[in-house]
Image (cartoon, rainbow, N blue to C red; front, side, top):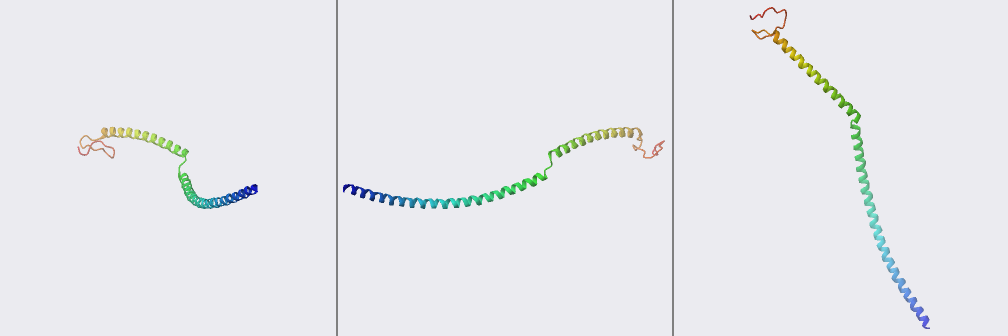
Length: 132
């Protein structure tokens, strides 16, 4: 008999522990459901944020593409720079030549300018100045 009492006591203890465990399991299941709900809401907000950021990235990519289309290739820039240098050299040569011609013209003007009226004859032949 004492063994049957112990068995009964143990069965009672097991039943109590089982009830206690079921209550704990129910409480943990509620916590899990709450966390799942929170996680689902968080996932939805992350997806919405991702969509917004993806749209911004796509807009930036479109802007970048249009800017790249507008850009002048480096080879074209180098070509244009070399043409600018060539034209600058030509300009300097022409400027030097113009200075030479200006100097020659000044010398010719000094030679044919009338010492009396300080005018340069515009027609020919000039034998004497009409002003004396």
